[in-house]
Image (tube, rainbow, N blue to C red):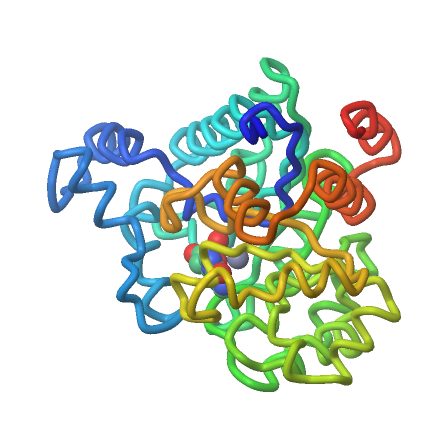
Length: 331
Ligand SMILES: O=c1[nH]cnc2c1ncn2[C@H]1C[C@H](O)[C@@H](CO)O1
Ligand SMILES: [Zn+2]
């Protein structure tokens, strides 16, 4: 099967984990930021999380370098444009990209400037290519909470105009959801969709909490519902979208190898699974690669692929008009 040509939908991809290495070099030069090397291969290998990663925390250390050049409006706009361009060129028809506005204030940008820059880059790509998208605002779970509502307020202006949802990301501790109830409630009241990274690092209860306490409509990863019957049943009962990211899960040791990934078992049990990249540079992947890996490892057919494509449409935080557009590509 030609995986490159298949129409694809990516609902879980981080902007800062998906920066082109050459862009890091260009922007560092423009912004007079010293780099450990000027060699593109060296920069690339500094950003890719190695197979020897022990856990999610080690994986997350790869984001400092890209973030160092994502502190100006022009840099952020360019990186957003290029990510949508890269995705469009491999036939991604709809793309939800997430990022943490709190990580882009090192040089004093306001949340409005930051969010407006990512949206502008996305819209420039949408005008040039056959791709549609939305942004998801990720709050870092380990950061101080005093500016979370300011992020939500700044993003609310862009709802329906490039921003669609609220997320929690970063290291996953057991029980983290309890601390974020008022923030998720506030985001929901403002009109955000809710997706939460949960059940990535072994804690199925976190998925249960994300759905029951934070009103999550989808969860990032969610794979550890396998060890928690209550979470599994809740996901099934409420048709909660599971944003699986197989390569990333292997790097963070969420699973030991692809054959042990529960994505096929979930699919066979009619859970709404989607296939996504998580971080194109840090996980050294594309949607073409993720789809190929899953289909080949689990012997999925073309019909299975389009079932998953349609689940992604159903789970997308997109307008009805965009969903209708995406249905044109379905078989
Ligand atoms: O897979 C992930 N799990 C939890 N947090 C993640 C993952 N990938 C990236 N992040 C974090 C690191 C980024 O700096 C942040 C915003 O994109 O989100
Ligand atoms: Zn993620």
